[in-house]
Image 1: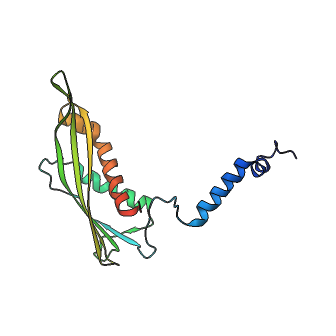
Image 2 (image 1 turned 90 degrees about the horizontal axis):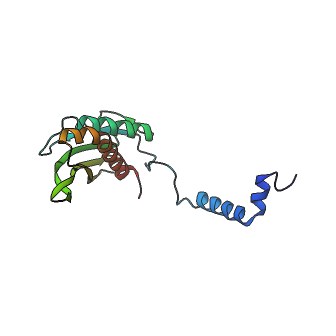
Image 3 (image 1 turned 135 degrees about the vertical axis):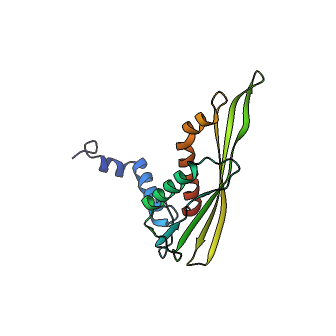
Length: 178
């Protein structure tokens, strides 16, 4: 069997193959790198996800239920946590939409608005009952849209992005060790 016919032998005998092999072994053996989506202590088994309240000055009635549903789906789908409604859940997540501001103009051309910005902020409270700790943080995202669109048109175009991005940011703040 020749080196050209067996890619494993070729990689093993080449400098590039040795370098790749060394990097793979060192990355997996040092314990620093993790390719999982979520970092959760082993003793954390349950999560309670409260309905996201909307206390923004301007209320989009679709946003709170869509965010709540998407966050529940993401946590259940990408972690091994069991969802519960009990107040003794190991992680308890409560969130409030505190800002939904569609009134910013960010692009102007020939003295006319060309781009508007919708800013969405969600305040999150994470209670870790096993540690008796609480973590509070805000997630804010900006979504630009054409000034030629009405707010209703922009919302219908942006809603999927808003829900996905805010949900991802909340999830990453809670479950990622960045």
